[in-house]
Image (cartoon, rainbow, N blue to C red; front, side):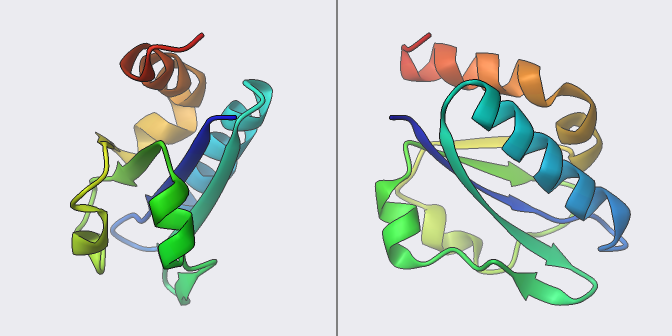
Length: 105
C-alpha cells in the first residue's frame, strides 16, 4: 500500500490549511492509499506526524505558501511541494503525479 504524509499550512492558518488537508485525504483515499496530514494552522500544529509516520511514508506533500515548521525532519524523503490552493482544487491531479513519480498506477 502506498503511504503518504502531508503538512498543510497557509498564510492565515485557517480555511485553506484545513481545506487542503481534507482534499488531499479524499484524493488519496480514492486511490486506496493511506495518508496522514499534519495541519499547521492558527491553532498550532494538529495531528503531528511522528518519526514512524515519516519513516514509513513513500512521499511527503508540503504546501509551500509559507514556511513549514520543523521541515528538516523530511530531508531524507521524496517531497512534493504545492500551494494550498492547488491542493484544494487539484488534489486528484497531485495524486496522479505522485503515482507517476513512484512508478505505480
